[in-house]
Image (cartoon, rainbow, N blue to C red; front, side, top):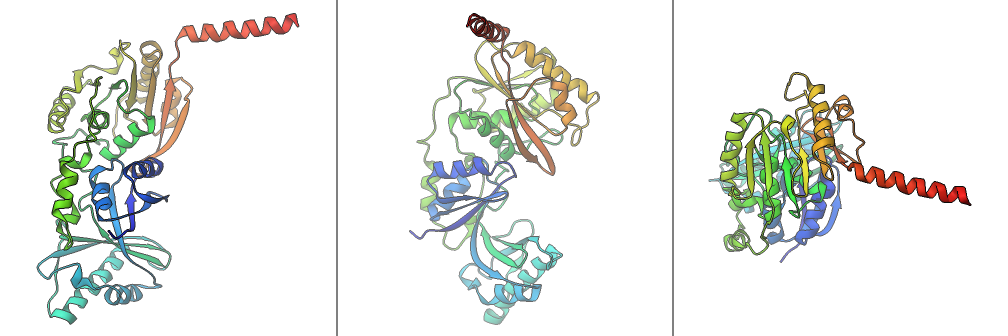
Length: 396
């Protein structure tokens, strides 16, 4: 089967995680870029990438690359270098998404109009009619990416953004994106070997993604449709085989615990957990972080507390002070990962992070920090060993 270049888009900070996912899927020539990873694969790999990747927002298939200095040159190249009637029927609709980083091209909307005109004029010249444009639910999504004068024209094989898994029935204010949640969990290295805790779970997104990772259930299983299903060369039998193959799923011997102090959030999370089919793995409880107690089993903690920019909460610094206090006293021996935006919030935790990872949450440049909570015994042990070393030096 023919191999071609594909591009998986993601959030800044998740590129390495996405690259590793692609390598694990069997993709070739995996190369990391900015907010994207390019790779080589055949049609089956393109279907798998859409169905299996947890940290991709969309998967693009480039169909033309060219140089252009102005919108008219873009129009000419789009109209004359591609046989559009092999990709699109008059009965089908299409849409254009333009991403532009260039001094020459100031307005991405104008670029999108010129690409649309080029495709429409191609059909009018050949067939006397043109396909319609649909913004909401097109049959073919076309992407043009311009970096200075380098243009890449691609087909969007995903359709709706891949973060829209399909299990989220409702959401609390400013919910965490599913791709971001999965990326955070994969960044910790956790794959279901211990219990997992989100003490401020909101809509339950982190908890659900954790349960799916633990069981190795592919995120695409909840989706109603993918963009490539409307393509002329869609192989339904091949996609059915991928969709129905559950051989990689595994048992999960532990639990995911999701706590929140808002009854509405717990109600929303309950609906979402049920829709994702992970009710037996996720334990939901109405409880504030303030009442968090030392887990009986070994666990990892991952949390996305409010940080004032997207969700306003009174006494934000007090909240982070309380988080630090609870971790010190009730998460001894554990590893806690916190995503936040403000340095003064992190300062209030009062613990030294062992890991710091930059991560963009929407337009906010955040950090994802790990805190390893050692118990007093370790400190005593270190002090004793230091004292012994010092005394042996003294004797010498």
